[in-house]
Each structure stands twice: as C-alpha cells, then as structure tokens.
Length: 203
Ligand SMILES: [Ca+2]
Image: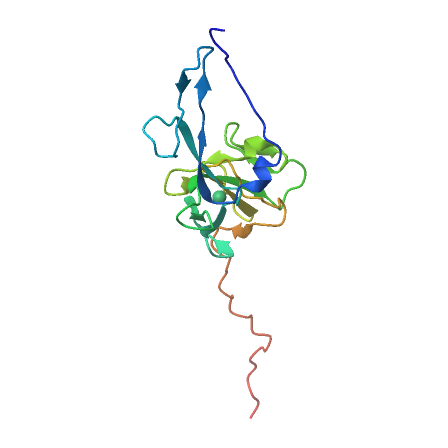
C-alpha cells in the first residue's frame, strides 16, 4: 500500500484523561509492508521520534473595562480595559484578543451598536455587535455613538489562544454610564418688583 492519508484515531476517554493547562506531545510512527519503521522511537526524545506538541487549556479568559470608569461622563473617546488568562501562568494559553460591544440601555428593541452601520440597530444576540480591539485592549468610540443624556452599557469579551472565550451575560455583566455633554441650565434670578408703593407720610 502506497499511502494511508488521512489516518485518524479517537482514543476513548482521551479528552477527559488529559490535565488542564499542561503541555503534551502526540507521537506517531508508521511501518511499511517490508517491516521498515518511521518514527520508531524507544524514548520520547529519541532523534527519530515524530511528534506534534500541543498545550491543553479549557479555562476561560477574563476581561474588565477600566475606561471609562465613572457613572456619568461628558467625554468618551475610547473604551479600554485589561484581560487575563487565569490558571497556571506557565501553561495557560494566553490572551488572543479582546472584543467590545456597546448597548444603549435607554432605548428598547435592537439597541446594540453596529460597527459597520454606525447605528444602534442590532440585537444583543447578534455576533456582529462584537468588534476586535487593538493589542492594548482599547478601541475608539465612533462618531454618532455618544448622544447626550443617553445611557450605555459596555461589554468586553476576551479570547485565549486555545479558542476559549469569556462567558458574558448580556444585559447583566457590564459597565453602565450616562453620557451628558450639555452644560446645566441656569438663569440668574430677576429682581423682585416691589409691591410696596411709597407714599408721602403726612405730617
Ligand atoms: Ca485559558
């Protein structure tokens, strides 16, 4: 037989037997009809060994928003935060990317920001509400996103390099703030008109 491609195997219990956040190697060897072996190593580090290394990580990463941090704001130019892949620091896969979504909570219906349409027009179940942030986990707010007196909820979602994504409870996990860039209204009081009419005092 010339080739056997692809070959596959699915050992029972393999996935539950391996330990989270550890490095593994899968070794392979093959023998032809004449008895010649390839990859027939006696020990794992034999030079003839043929293997594929991988790291097993099934722990979800985390992220939090740090900018903006206040409840009421009159300027929001960027959304930024921090992210981490918890667990054993020597074996956790590490952060791949962080995504962010913006929701207007003072308006009902489909109130999540569309990064392409530039409107609050998507349902929170729509994956298009998420946009990738830059490597430093920040993204700029878009023109038309921040309207005075509107209330916003910001979500962040981290992914690790093993493909685990942060679990986000939409409508619950969030940072909420009210945007207001209109100065408060104030009018100086007018002098009261005197109700007392002066009259000459008779002697
Ligand atoms: Ca992880």
